[in-house]
Amino acid sequence: MTFWTTVNWLPSVLRVYHKFPKPGVSLQGTLDPKVPRAAEGDSLRYRQIVQNLTSNAIKFTEKGYVHVAVSLEHEDEESFDVLTEVMDSGIGVPSAVCSALFTPFMQFDNSTTKKFQGTGLGLSICKSLAELMNGQIGYKPNPEGAGSLFWFTAKLKKVPQESSIQALETQLETLNRPSIPSSPLEAIKKAAVNKHILLAEDNTINRTVMLKMLAGLGFPSIDVAVDGEEAVKLATATQDSTTRSSPYDLILMDISMPLLDGVEATRKIRNAGLQMPIIAMTANALKGHAENYIAKGMTGYVAKPVDRNVLINLLLGYMQQREQGD
Image (tube, rainbow, N blue to C red; front, side, top):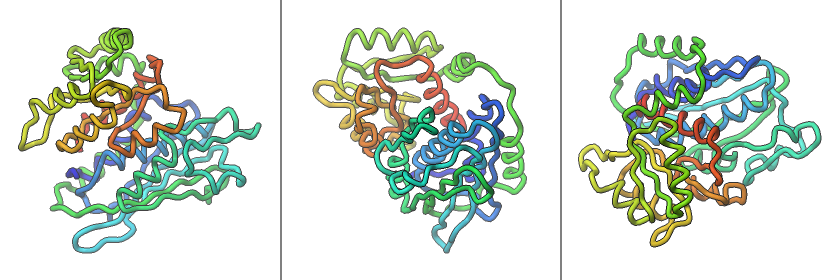
C-alpha cells in the first residue's frame, strides 16, 4: 500500500497521451472535487487499469473524444469508493461479444472491427486488478451516442488531507492543456537521465541486444542479472529499510531464467516491499501467460523479440508515472 494525493491521479496517468496526442481525438479528464484529497491504496494497480482502458479507448476511436472521469461513489469515516469511467466516441463494442469482454485476451474478430484487434494488458487483467482493489469493472454503450463506456470501482483508505483546492484546480488545468509535441525518442532520452535500470536476462545474445538498445535510448546506468536469484539480490541488496526504496527505477525481467524464474523473482522483490515497475520480457505474451505475470506482481510485459518502438512507449509511460510520484 502507498500514500498518494488524488489531485495527481489523472494528470500522472494521462500526461503521456497529451504529450503524443492522436490526431482527431480530444482527450479530457475530470476529477470530482468531492473525492477525498489523499488516499492510501495501490496506486500502481489503479494506474494500470486507467492506462489500459484509456489506451483502448484512444485506439478504438478514429475521430471524436475520450473522456476520463473520476467521481466519489461512497465514503465513510475510514474509507471511500471511487468510480472511474472511460467514455469514448469510437466504434463501440459489438453486442455479440459484450458478454465475453473480460475473458482472457478477448479480441474483436468480425470484418468491421478486425483492424482494431488487441487490448493492451487485456480487459481480464483489468478485472483482476479491480477485484484486488475490492472493486468491480464493467461496460455499457456510450449514453451520449456512438462509442463505449468502461467503468471500474476501487476502495481506498482515507488519510489526512494534504492537498488544497488550488492545487486541484492547477492539476486539472494542466491536464486539459495540450502539451508541445516531441518525438518519443526525444522524450525517452530526457526521461532516462539519471535513471538506473536492472536487466535480468540469462541469454547472452538477448542480453547484448537489450543492453545496446537501452544504451541507445539514453539510459546511463544499467545493471545486469543473469538469473532470477541474482536479480533479487541486486534489487534488494541496498534496500533502505525505512523507505523501502531500491537503487533501481525499473526492472526488465526475463520470464525463463535458471535458478529462479522471472515470476518467482518478482514475488520475492514485491515481498521485500519494493514497488518499482517490473516489466516481463516473454515470448508467451500472446499465449495467455501475460495475465498471470500481471496478477503475480509484474507491472506490464513486452513480447520477444523486443520491438524498439514498443519498448520506448512502454518505458516512457512508466518513467513519467514514477516522476509524478505516488
